[in-house]
Length: 400
Image (cartoon, rainbow, N blue to C red; front, side, top):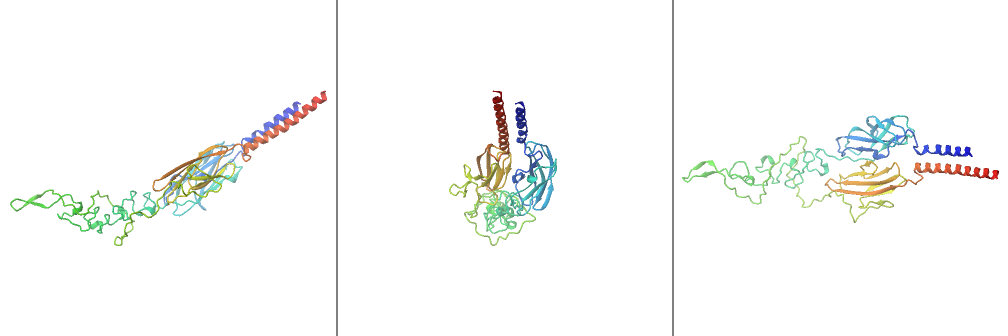
């Protein structure tokens, strides 16, 4: 009987280690969200491109990451140092954002010790569309009223859709700035009663000499109220106009009338309560900002609501320390648990929408190798136990 008990102990002992790790040396990318950027993708800007490398094995691992834009090598990262037990390391290269759409491919090289699971050693991101901002003022070109002159405030005094920074007739009175005696107050007649070079519409001092009681003129000018010009708006403090070297000339003679309401659609990130996306078998977040579907035991597909606008940004937090910045993304969780998925959507008009949903991944699933290994161990245990009990029963029968 002792020999069977010993066999039972051996079976249990050898079944337990397999529940620790599928591979001893296994380092790789958890998904395409392992590649991310540290700021907005503005065409022509220099930013930092990151990769998050995860150690899925039981051995500490070193490696390098090579980044490719399509087939062109961008650069090689610093050494990856990923400790065992699922800890990750982040490395980077400096990257110049191209002028057109692109994607990034990352490849692990120089892995030590040799990787036993090369299937997760490379990853390719979705296609990115960079923002075009020629003057670098933070306003996308198609929304910038001075595309080639920096003007983040987008000030437009005469409301002609041409920003003051590049408008050669800031007040819109038909007189170019260089010849206008009131550049910031409309005065098409250029009236200048005291002939001091400052138009009456913006002149607060009357420089004409005051006549004396004897009929002569006094030698000093005195202040006198200036007749208020008809329909003249209040003077504003002039702001310096940037004379950009690469500013394109603007023709003012054929100025189009300004519409009272801008016809272009404004970006909005508030989910429309009357129009919801076709979701099929997707689940919907509480505010209908995004939907999600379980593709496999630990793999989910997330889909953000579609919004108008050219500069809408998406920030996903999957609740496990990983993130993504595309509208539609698939994410693979490392193991069972309850996760809070959070999405922040921001528009170029300053509007922001936030939404969260809970994801629950069960431990009791045959796709979970830990659960499958546990069942296998229990199966071995029960088989040995049946054999031992049967042998004990035979021994008891023989003794009787």
